[in-house]
Image (cartoon, rainbow over all chains, first blue to last red; front, side, top):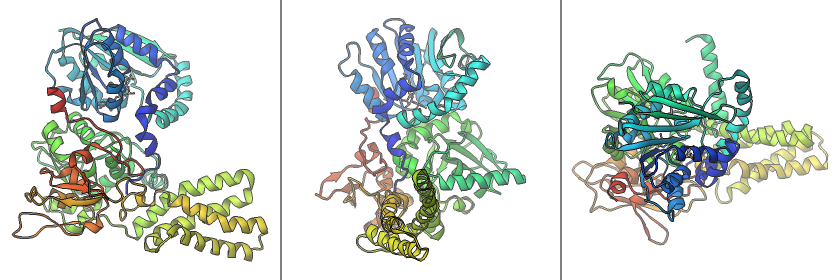
Length: 217
Length: 374
Ligand SMILES: C[S@@+](CC[C@H](N)C(=O)[O-])C[C@H]1O[C@@H](n2cnc3c(N)ncnc32)[C@H](O)[C@@H]1O
Ligand code: SF4
C-alpha cells in the first residue's frame, strides 16, 4: 500500500543526481564547485552542509581540508562515501543529519562552512536557522561559502529565467528528484543572519550566486 | 471564508484528488489554528496541500499549533514509506518553525500513518520532543484532543469504504483516461472520448469489486469490460476495427489501472515486493508491553489484554508489511520472517525505505552517535 507512480524517479535519484544537476545548471555546476573549493584555505577545518553526492567534498579533501560532511539523505551520503572511498587526503566525517542539527556541533570549531545548492531546498525559516547556527560554529574570522540558485536582478534576465524555469523545474524533478525554489536574495539573507558579506559572484545570467562571507566577531 | 476562497478550495480538492499521484507542496512552518496558547497541543503533518487544508478544516473550533514539515509535497503515508517524511524532516520542522518558543511543553502529535517513516525515539534523542501518533484521519483529531489523547480502535484503523474507493478510482481514472484519450486523439479522434469514458468506468469497477474477485482478477475484469464494450459498440453499429478495439482495450486498461493496485489500497501489501512473503513475528522474550505496535498498526493486528504484560500478535494474516510496528518498537521485539525462515531485523527495516514497487532497497548508514564516535 505504498503508492505514487512517480516515486520511482525520486527513489532512484542519487544515480541520476549528478547528470541532473549538470542539466539544470547548463553544465555550470562544475565551475561552481571549483570556485567554492578554491575559496577555502588549504588544510582548513570545514563543515559542509548538504554535501549530496560529494562533488564539493572531494575537491575540499583534495585541498587537504578536514571535512565534516552532513546530509539528511542516506542515499546521497552513500554515493558520496563511494565516490571518496579511494580519494587521497583525510577521509571526511560523514553525518546523516538534517541541517538544523548542526546546533549540536561544537561552537567555533570550523574555519569554513560550505553550503552548495542546498539552501534553496530549505524553507525560509530553515535557512535562517541554519545560517545563524552555522555562524556560531565558525571561529571568529572564519568564512561562509554559500552557492545557490537566486533570482536575477536585471528585469530582462528575470524574464529569461522565468521562461526557462518551467522546463528546468520539470527536468530537475524528473532527473534529480529535487524541486527547489531559488533563494530570492542569498547575499541579503546571509547578511541578515549576522555575517559580513565580502563578495558575491554570479553565473548563468545572474541566476546562480556564490556568496563569500565572514564571521566578523 | 469568502466565496472566492471556498471556490478555490473546491477546485484544488478536485485537482488534487484527480492528480494525487503528483506532489503538491505547500509552505512549511508553523500555522496557528484558532487561538492557541503555551499549553495548547502541537500537531505535525506533511506539506501536502490537500492534507494541510483538510487538517485545518477538521480542526475548526480547536486551538492548536500545526507544524507543517517538509515532505516534498507528498501525502503522509507515501512520504513516510518512501523516505521523504522521516525523523529528519520532523526534527527540521520542530527546530526551525519556532514552535518551541510558543509552548511550554515538548509533546508533538503526528499522524499515525507517519509511523513507517518517523522514528519516535530518534526524534526525542535528536530534538527532545516526545512523539505520539494520533489518529489516522484528520476528522478524528478533535475527539482525540478532547479526550486528552485517547485513541479509539476505529481511530487507529485504516478503512477502505465506499468514499475511499471512489476517491482512489478518481485518482487513477483521471490520469489514465487523459493519457488514453489524448493518445487516441492523435490518430483516431472519434475514439478518444469513448475510450476515456471506458477508462473511467473501469477505474470505478476496479476499486469497487477488484478485491472481491477470485483467481485471475485482471483477466476476469478485462473480460467483463470487453463483453460490455463489445455489446455497446455492436448496438451502436460500429465496424470491425471498432469492435476489435472494444474487445482489446478493456484488457489493456485494466492492466494499466491495476498497475499499483495494492499500493493504492490499504487492504493489501504492496505488489511486486521482495518482501511479499514476509510474515510479522513477535519475540515474546523481548516484549515488555510498551504497546507502541498496538498504537501504530493500521490493520489492528495486535491485541492488548488486561493482566498480561505482553502484546498479542492476534491477526498476523491482516498484516500489510508496512513496518510501522517494527520501526517503533523500543525493545526490538518485532521483526519480519521471509519465506525461507530468514529473519529481517528491525535495524534493517528502519534503514531501508519502500519504493513504489514496495522494494526495500536503499542502504542507510548507522545513526549519528555511532558515526561521530567512528
Ligand atoms: C542539490 S543537492 C547539492 C549537493 C552538493 N552540495 C552539490 O553541490 O552537488 C542538495 C543536497 O542537500 C541536501 N539537503 C537538502 N535539504 C537538507 C537539509 N535540510 N538538511 C540536510 N541536507 C539537506 C539534500 O539531501 C541534497 O543532497
Ligand atoms: S503488523 Fe503489519 S500492518 Fe501492522 S504495523 Fe506491523 S507491519 Fe504494519
